[in-house]
Length: 253
Image 1 (tube, rainbow, N blue to C red):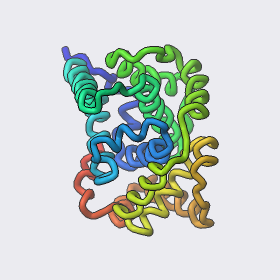
Image 2 (cartoon, rainbow, N blue to C red):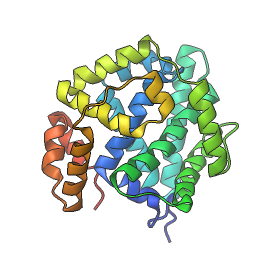
Image 3 (cartoon, rainbow, N blue to C red):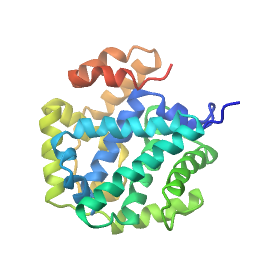
Image 4 (tube, rainbow, N blue to C red):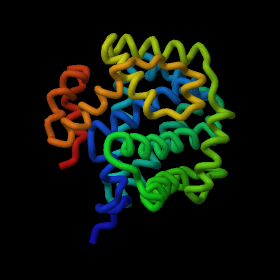
């Protein structure tokens, strides 16, 4: 009998089984990544500024490989992620701080919840705890120190990290220039409006995102089309053509 890393009936599979929810998760993460004090590590290899969309899809691929795999395969994927980061540390002759690893896990927890709630419905406390537990197991496998062990503990630590580990820097400004260059003007505006609906107040304060009056009606239109399963056309128009196949592949039947 197969043992899955995440149970087949888990809310986590439902969240990560929709392309648009995955894209919203990484829209929020893109804002917070840009403010993180450890973002220079992502600049060290040069991959993030050179191809932020490609980096997004590779990160999504690893996360989904963990969530939709059997236990052994998921653990191997986590170990591979750990190995990749250790190699980067060797090249830079420095260590990525544990709090930076934790911040990435915290992003995945936070935006998994907020993206699903924005597009679908409110999650129960039990469902939020389930989301936390999945990513806690990822962090535990990576041997991260000082991880919170409960959802309520995570909420407290999440607030602490938002105030301790975020700063607007030249890396922030450069990343947003790259987002705009790779997405184009219209998609860039849409990205920022999605971020506005997802990110916590601390992020909004550090990274002012101008609100446009059509963002809420546009979101409701998308949700209506999604409800009647007609959102594919709008999604195809909004997504960069080079990534349409990868985006379609994110939908789990």
